Length: 284
Image (cartoon, rainbow, N blue to C red):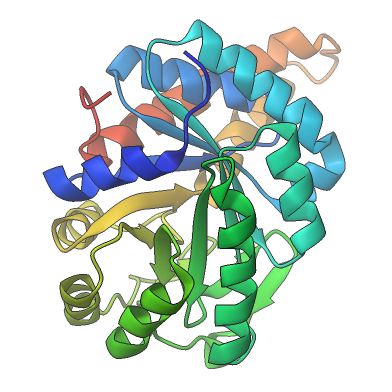
């Protein structure tokens, strides 16, 4: 089937109490791995690319590969642009065939964040593209965006409700204590804040920084209203470690198929585990 907007996928997840895994990919093999994982488990899927990956591969290449994968698949697949503050790149991705985009103006004051988000929502409306925005600031490193722990601000529930009303945004990523990258210790998630935000906001909520969050904490966050979980760093590590293992065993290896296939299989297994954790298996 063709690529779909993530809006109906996430609304269904919110209504039924599970979340959809959103996986950042950087190569064709990574994309194939998460699609095969979704197909095997009958899970809805969101493929994500960062701005850095769009610049590296090209939005049209990524969209074309995702479209081929989706056309071959029986499960619904959305293609999402993660963390972008550049309106031009957002429009480039929409024109290329992305079905979901994130405008990240969380570094700006509230009013400027509203204005930037509303501009993207209006532009995306004509083609049915999902728009995600962030309120508060999620700490850590995501591609070339770095937020120091001291600068990470938790989202205010009342501001979240006001933000959604003013922008018409389809999905919201509130800062609730998670961080991008791998956690040095247990994440300090504010579950009470998630519950209060979910009670005031009816649209699907997005859990950023999903790499390495303990299972019980993921399940609790999902039960409170998180409908999408982003996973990036953990996938890169799994993929890279599998390649390293091949070269450790055979330093002279020069056939990309010999190290990309094990990496793809390792990533597929990791994605299936995340889908199980999200509760999305069989929900396609």
